[in-house]
Length: 254
Length: 336
Image (cartoon, rainbow over all chains, first blue to last red; front, side, top):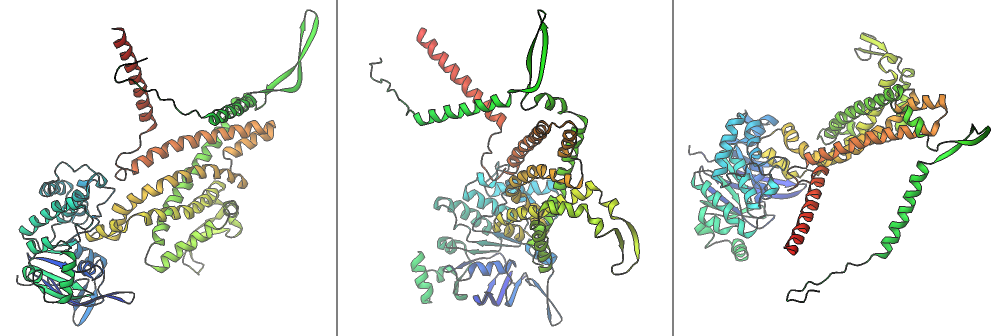
């Protein structure tokens, strides 16, 4: 079990000639919290989206739980996985979005059960029972019949976290989970995430919350212009950065 | 009148003089309209009675709009049969249109070039030609393909074959034409609905491990419905009226039945008015259905759905009742 949960070696990604990731190396150990920080457009979100194959990386090796993302190595050839296999890989990785993306046509409970029931083929009753447990865990018991528009941003994001957890993922990805929230609502979402980190979930968090990174992260990666400029223990990286770029970035955000 | 500390200040609302004149003018026009609709005309004949040994004659008056014949034929068997054909045509053509439209819209958004190209071509051809021409062409399809058969392509080996006229009876030809035409329009409605759903919804569904089909069925289509339903209501009502074109291939729908009647009785306008009344009745019922359907699919999108007319009526009545109660309460307070 010493194998890392996520391992990226020289990952490249470009959109129509614009190179967003220029050879990223990253290792995320099991039960660790990793924060990705950096200015906008640095490729943080793209890296996250490559990890659950929402985007296809163009070159390099990307492994989740020891398996190549989106490909299979047989002999000396890489075979692209079919849709079914890719869906299966994704179902084991939870993702939380900046804009929550709760299903607008479903109420809170249905938002959480729709994945397990349709993807994991869990029985409706079992899924509901688990969903209620998760709602209690994120502090939203009694809100099951509400529709997303009837909730505040912070509540929506907590439901989104519960929705991802309902799939019992081995890895959770957070794409700027508090950036779209009013300042007074940020705390409630971060609390849920801290709680999740304490429970031993492997998490990769793209964030601008330096306080959260310092408190919760085991490792921080600073991305700038598609490469990792600096990484390491947040207490070291965030307090005494060695790269001038990180120094100027921290000066701006802190 | 009230001189104590919290004297009430009277509010005089603005007088809209222009509005009053406008309303009066409109009322006049409406009154004239109603008068002419229910006026009578001399029919040309005279009716004479012997009164006190002398004949007194006066012209016979008949309804200008022929209300008596409208009333007489309104539930005539032929008319009702025609109405049924109209309803059948509308329903079947809409079902064909909706099924085709959804399929074509999904094809259109497919990554497969051949599928999206085929969908585009279909929409292009069927939306770009008049529906009347299409009805005529399907009605005369037997000139192009006298025999239809299922067999091995490019050979003369057939498993089954039948005459085109037996498959494309007049009714079937009409319904095919209307359905295929509707499919082309409806696919555009569905496509706009699918595009209107936020991409984040698809991403969230994908990240849960849903397949493209599941994402479409469970997340995207239900949300697209909100955008799709209102124009669908319009399409159904529009189809109800478009079906009247089928008389060109001799299908006896509501208009056809009415035409048959006035060809014999020569009461052209009364019969056309009667047909219009029937079309109005059905489209009114359809509009009511559309309201409730829209309300159903708006759930989740609106915090509070708009009240139904019945709810609004109840609320208004409650308002009037409570006003009445407070008025009485005030009076009671004064007298005691």
